[in-house]
Structure formats: C-alpha cells, structure tokens
Length: 94
Image (cartoon, rainbow, N blue to C red; front, side, top):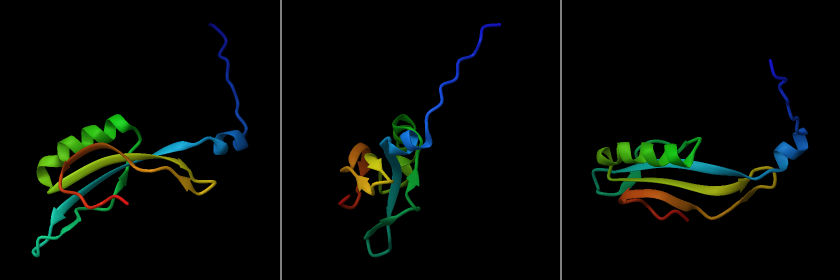
C-alpha cells in the first residue's frame, strides 16, 4: 500500500484565505403586487449548484436569482454581488 501524504495548514492560514459567499433567493408577488421574498436567502456550496437550483425553482416564483460575492468574513470585507443566474423580477441587489 502506498503511503498517504497529508498536508497540514495552520488555522491562521485557513482563516486568512478569502472565500465566496454564494446565495440563492426567490421572490413572489403579494396581493398588492409588490415583490417579496419567497423564503429566506439560502447559502449554497457551489456556483454550479446555485445555478442548477435556481433554474429548477424559477417556474414557481415571480423571480429568482443566484449570486456570489467574494468574502473575507474575518476582515468584514465583501465584494460586489455578481449575478450567476437571474429569471423574472427581482429587487435591486444593492
């Protein structure tokens, strides 16, 4: 059996790396015609999964959006949102 090599990273180096925040959100219209969230925004593990899930639920809601932004939660820094998939009507993202 071949030996298994394992690399260890310090906790500081793991936490200092930037990551991506990937979100899926859907919207419906209320009785007055206003766009409202269909559910709380959901954090998704990958961009591909977010787009796939958004396409699946798009026919059930007035609007759906999957987006990502670069994030460094330790520094409290977040980049601008980048839309991965959008269908229908959604509110402004800013």
